Length: 167
Image (cartoon, rainbow, N blue to C red; front, top):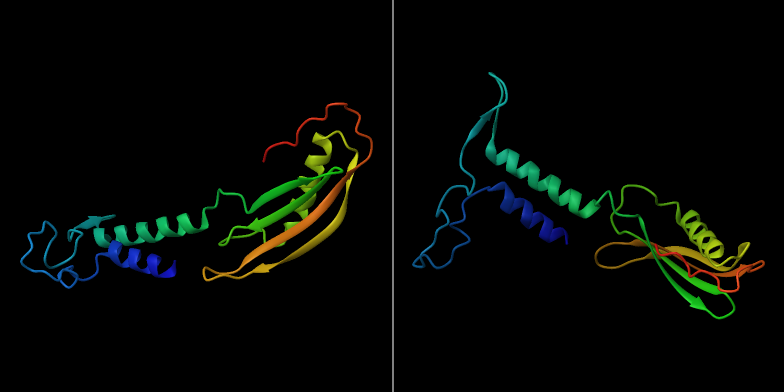
């Protein structure tokens, strides 16, 4: 993943020529054989300040890659759940691999989902039977995880309880 980001940045920056990338010099090509892929154009921001188009494209590419990796609008936690008999649920939470906050909120997210399941099923509450937090490591980096089992408790006032709400 890191190598793909680095290669993408290099390609977007237009640094150096692409002649070294082309091994067969007899093959017809529409890409420039030397120089940058990006035209050497200066953009005047003010009468005394200019910036090259190459720098604009480079920093736009870096920003786009950072936005794609961090994705600030996606939820921090992914919740998977499995329903067991006797009104029990297994909740499995995984935090997104690259995040910009929310590392300590596993228990809060776990409790929020347990309350949602209890109220949707007509129960007065829930009891946590098992709960654990940890880190799972892989080649792409570590990822926060949380697992737990809850039992829904209290009177189920509805004869046909609503199904649990979708996330």
